[in-house]
Length: 98
Image 1 (spheres, rainbow, N blue to C red):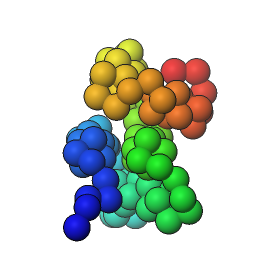
Image 2 (image 1 turned 180 degrees about the vertical axis):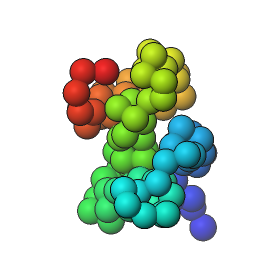
Image 3 (image 1 turned 120 degrees about the horizontal axis):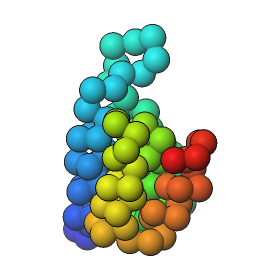
């Protein structure tokens, strides 16, 4: 059986889980990663490609950066690990001026 995603997707999941490890869904005790998993699943289920699914996992990493000074590091890590297209997609989903 052929893998449906590459090691990049698994690495993106680990990266998102690490960056959001202390976050919960608003007003709940549910880990925030559940939202990111749902977004990524919707992308896959609606014909998105792996870069788009990775961006779904990472779409809040820049705007939720703690401390905010970590934004430059996070942008560079996304570029280095997942490529320019993923970084562009994530930045397109980022609220505010980070």
